[in-house]
Image 1: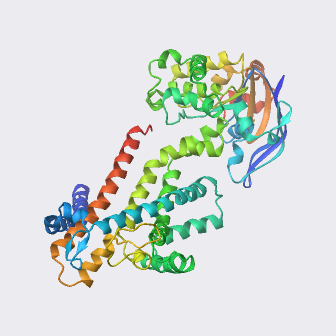
Image 2: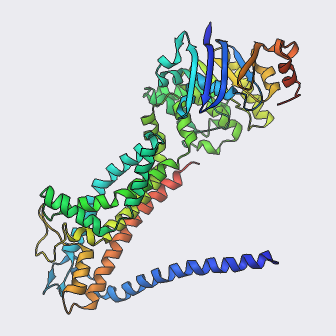
Length: 282
Length: 248
């Protein structure tokens, strides 16, 4: 430790190296998928039904299916998750029970997705008799992303300075009005971040939809939420392992569409978040 | 007229006794300066008057605090806090524009009419000696104002909900002498319409603005009397020592 500057430079070098090690694989994945998948992408691929045992045609039903499932999951999980987060951060007392609840929610985020799939099968498909359907699949995905939404929303709410609440209360404003007018508007960027993460997870997971909704192949689009749909991650699995002789281009094309869909949803949330941040006043 | 009547007030946080056996009467439309070294319980005393203390989970009290003859624990906390405004030690604007900071309380308390809101905002900004400085900056973020301006904005924000009492918790601790003078000027002006309780670490400030001065030490009220008397012939030696800067 004779020369602190050299130690610092060495440390910086290793920190930079670690960052590089993270960036390179991610970059490579994206480059390979684009390189191999882009030739497959055309209007017909995006808007047509699969044909010839999924070896030709498009992936339209799988795209639609994934959009349905992700939207359904968010519609179900965002309000419930947000309300739970508000309760935990603003109303619950700091006692053993509530600390256990918080710990349980954090841990639920780490439960393997196939467990959620099995749970969805038992509860929604069998017990509530929804059958393998969009409803059952959305609810299963919703349950899976609930812990992410609750945890990130709670952190976002708690990051709003306590003094703002105190000022608001000191003006004779009730707890709920304070939450609605001061806390929530300033927590929205963080809540959106949680939703971004949740959308990415819901769109990409195969296991939870495997038992609850995903169809191997369907010749038409679903007409109600009690029907099955195809979904991109499951479709990708099917054409990669279950159907022989599928052109590599179609497989990578499907992966590219899935990736783009998730990135696009993230982009929308990032833009909204950016606009809120710009207006942030402290 | 007596605004607050406090009898035998004890306050604990967990097992720490913050106030013991405080009995005091606060007269309407006067400025009461509260002085004492840190940890003497003066801020706890102040936060008792609008029931902010009870937000700490381990708060306990005994004794009686009456506001206009009514036990404050029988008054709805929101109603009480509307009547008893507060200005905190640090300038704490809400993350809103200058205008919306003042309008916030109005909106919540049911004044929806735009024109009426504007009139009140202008009026209270003038009362807080801030109008001339911000009249062209109403739409800017309140965080862009200087510290002294922010503190006067906080005063205006309290005034907007039409309180009877304003609690000042070391309002000038982060301000330069000129800003301090402006805040003090505003307080003296407000005295004709409001009861003011000023907790301050600045003994000279207490002498400058207070009609009466109360001296707290280790959670006890040592004495309260007319400011002139406290600063010339205090009846307790400890008061004299503190004012002369012998401790604290």
